[in-house]
Image (tube, rainbow, N blue to C red; front, side, top):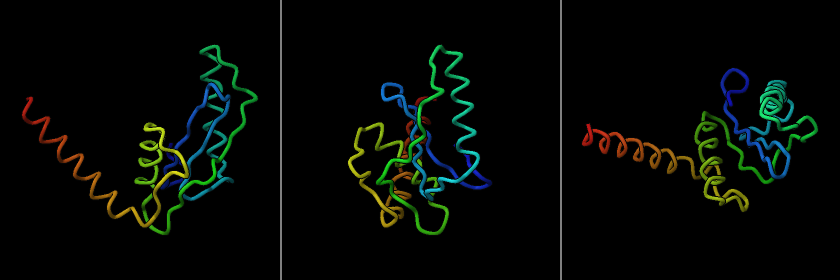
Length: 120
């Protein structure tokens, strides 16, 4: 989700646990827009016959935090990757890993581009 004027965070709906989790590399728990997004999702889920009104909003800990700079995009992608792979034990990355993560991500997109070119 896009929060504030220039930041991303990951909002996860845990239906089985009946919770919302926010993975935020700036740990901005007091951002007014995050609870607003959750309220929108609760209304959406209600339309799908899921009553999420009492589901808590949690900020999992530990949650890797960024230093200064614009690494929130990479952190958000890494949160998604780790959760998709179920590799969430302490979310195994940190600010120190960001230069390598940027290179890996760029390489992934370059390979995907060229693989797609061969199929056109």
